[in-house]
Amino acid sequence: MKILVLSDTHGFNDTMFEVIRRESPFDMLIHCGDLEGAYEQLRDRVNCSLHVVAGNNDYDPDMDRVKSFDIGRYRAVLTHGHRYRLYSDMSPLYYLAAENHADFVFFGHTHVPTIKVEGPVTLINPGSLTYPRQHGRLPSYIVGTIEDGNSPFFEIKYISDEDIPAS
Image 1 (cartoon, helix red, strand yellow):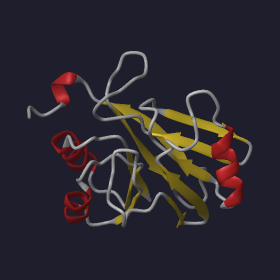
Image 2 (tube, rainbow, N blue to C red):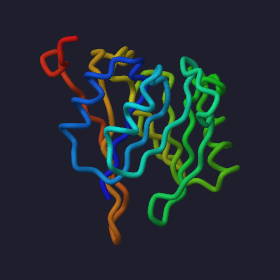
Image 3 (cartoon, rainbow, N blue to C red):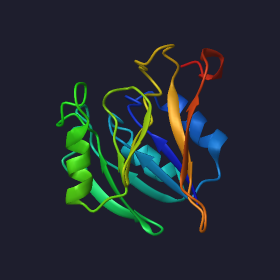
Image 4 (spheres, rainbow, N blue to C red):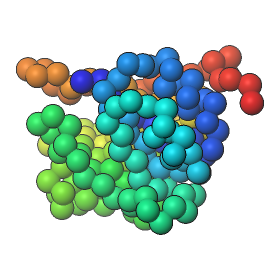
């Protein structure tokens, strides 16, 4: 199973849809929030399992703030992260994982790509396709692969300025 993980696209849909085009086909798309009005467009453009939560810049009252779901034999929980003060401490995400019996916590908000394994829990943040904040400030996303008999594998991918479509 191939999984595409995005976050913090902030309404800059051309870049998001270019990444979707490049990484297709995939079996699941996870967006960790701050789509800024692009949920329906995203839903209409992908033909796979889609999991999305609202970020601090998403005002659709029908969007989940926290969502739990299965990925094969694994349990995942998805949140944007703005309610957890993640800039100084990631421990609230481990509590969220424990509360939801989750193997993976997908989150956004910090705009810094992260894959952090601690014990039985993996924290996954794809960073931002729009306003990256990590060293080098390249837009980022994550591609994961989960196959029977193999350990889950997640990889941070970056795109350069030349790869970003002109608006």
